[in-house]
Image (tube, rainbow, N blue to C red; front, side, top):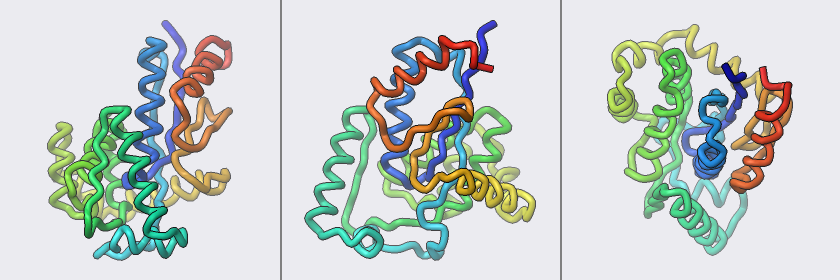
Length: 218
């Protein structure tokens, strides 16, 4: 029986480069044919932890947060659209698109982990937000995503009102921040080596080879 390489992906549901980075990582895993040696776990990070329930216009938010011009913002969007197309993912940026609060989504991702459905739910949520123009802070959208991946929606949504479940996610989020995670995606291999950003497939393949060919995989 082969040992397992643990990969933690610190990420937010509404982080576009997190999706591209994961797709690159998954392609590297597939090309090396080592899916049976890898265990992926998603860790919570909120790009905008104080985002109110009504959200904020995305262009307005990006301009305020990063001080970018309209032209820079449009160029950045186009780079994402192109990067998404290269990994068969659709980024559908549109006029009036809003950035939203994602804390509830992280609670459900923690719930999904217990059933081996975390990656499936993560991709369903990020697809809903970026490709289907859906608000992933809304309970009806979250319920739809849970049902789509075969989870008990009523049981999962009850966690949103569970103080212990909320504390667990907040504590986990703080844990990674205390370790120095300031940007996402941050992808950590066996809690030993970390890379940030949507690295090229070749970079991931190099790291994966290093770990899966070494005695350090536990």
